[in-house]
Length: 276
Image 1 (spheres, helix red, strand yellow):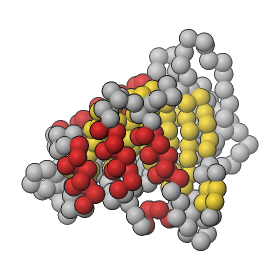
Image 2 (cartoon, helix red, strand yellow):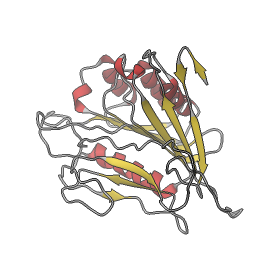
Image 3 (cartoon, one colour):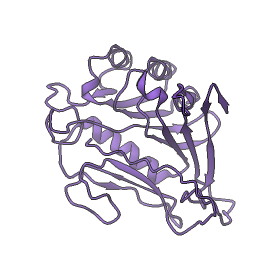
């Protein structure tokens, strides 16, 4: 889908597929196993730096198709997009359970205040509440010393099209005007229950704001398969397979060793450097 110099590109994969260099190969999936699917989207403003709303619109479309009784969780760093906030408010109003966190440095923005007021401060937590000695939710770094909550993700327990356990991880801040004309990416993983559960658990740990400099959770793979893993930080000690910096928040990595392709195009690695 393209227009006005913008492009949305989609790569679809299944549980037995992996995203390494966008090389896609697969093996048979038994009929009684719900496959994990991967979809990777790109925001491409082109050489002219045109605004591209494709990632934002995709996130909104998932929010809008979440049925009453289902759950949405979210974590946002820089945030001022009323389009996204209004979609979350509408979801809340139709009976979707909405829980989220926003970096404490965003607390003065009107969009953020309206979102918290509409859904409630027990549901949408501003990191650092109430004193804002921190802008982060978990990291014990004080304001002025890398204290920020840099996560950018949403999860959906169910969608109206029948999909369940959806994780939407992105490099994009929902922030205008700058982020609308940046190159960004978005990874949508559906059906990986351990990955989904780890993200939701992490979100509620962020909401609880129990401070530590050594938070570390690893998503366990599905039984009989290894579709993807998630590592959350801050971590004081480097663990096998994690970045060396203690400031890395999280990464999604499909399992190695299950694909190869002549394609040189690489799938995005969503690994922003930050505290949480």
